Amino acid sequence: MTLAKTLRASSKSCRIDSDYASQTPGALSEKAAIKATAAIAKKIRSLQFQLYAENRQSLLIVLQGLDAAGKDGTIKHVLGMMNPQGCTVTSFKQPTAIELRHDFLWRIHQHVPAQGEVAIFNRSHYEDVLVSRVHQLSPKPQINLRYDQINQFESLLATQSNTRVIKFFLHISREEQLARFAARLDDPAKNWKISTSDYIERQHWDAYRESYELLLRKTSTASAPWYVIPSDHKWYRNYAVACIVLETLEGMAPQFPKPNIDLSQVREEFHNAVLQEVRLGRVKALAKAMDRVIASRDDQLKLAGITLNEVHEINRQAKQVRKKPKSS
Image (cartoon, rainbow, N blue to C red; front, side, top):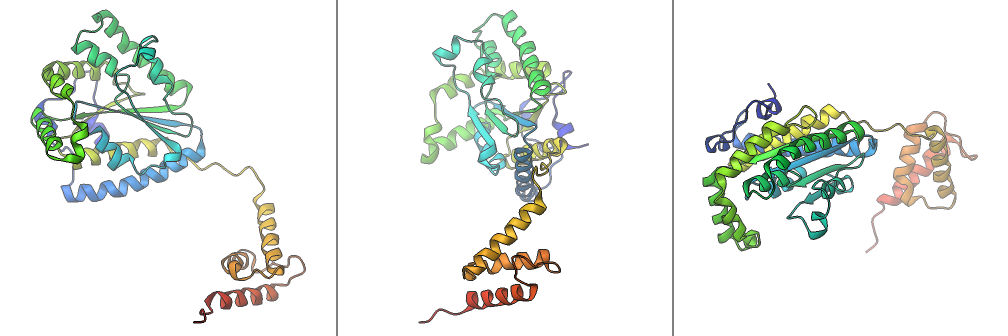
């Protein structure tokens, strides 16, 4: 069984008690997991580049968790190696006055990934059912309706935009959260993260746990699954998320598109451009380019009146010029 199957939430049950937060199902040793995560991150970057070049499908990664669960850390250590040119990160805070004048998905939809992109949500549309339920900001029938609307929204992304959606609940224990709050107090570089609201929300721990359990059961679907990531151990959190993102991208199987031009004609133009530079006497900077010409056309190169032997001789001279020591 893959790690993705092990950690995937189902509509029947999901475990988010404090004991589970410190477990490491399917893990290697800490040292081996850290090493594996670094290697996986490189594979993720390569596949993301192929996704960007292909420009036919996209990936949405949703990160949810209580305060100090490690959403920023996950982005930094696992997803930070992605090419920024094809990746966006959006952090959703409390809705603005303008956003509140629209439906709750309005502010979300404008940040979903376009074809070829990976979008990462640091918190998301799920705040509108979590916080509303815990603090009773909306009537229960309206909240219950939102679960269905979220499922429909994510289904729309999958069927109309060819967007794969994967969602991670970074699960920490009460004890670990308090330890991370202490670290923020002790480290000046983390003081800026401190908020009095963290301690206010902590008082609603059990209510949030129940709200998350309900959310996971109602919105973990085949096209947009939830994964519960035990996150007391940061190294395991990074490893688990990296494995699932890699497995998802491999399943998407992005391919580099075929060129829409005649490469043989372009190669001919390249060779002619190189030989033109040779005629102008700019041989020093062309040593590597000449190596490429000879390697690719060694048995047939007779362009612009220059024979193959002459090209070899020009290339030899260029290398000598490049290796010639500077006079003192």
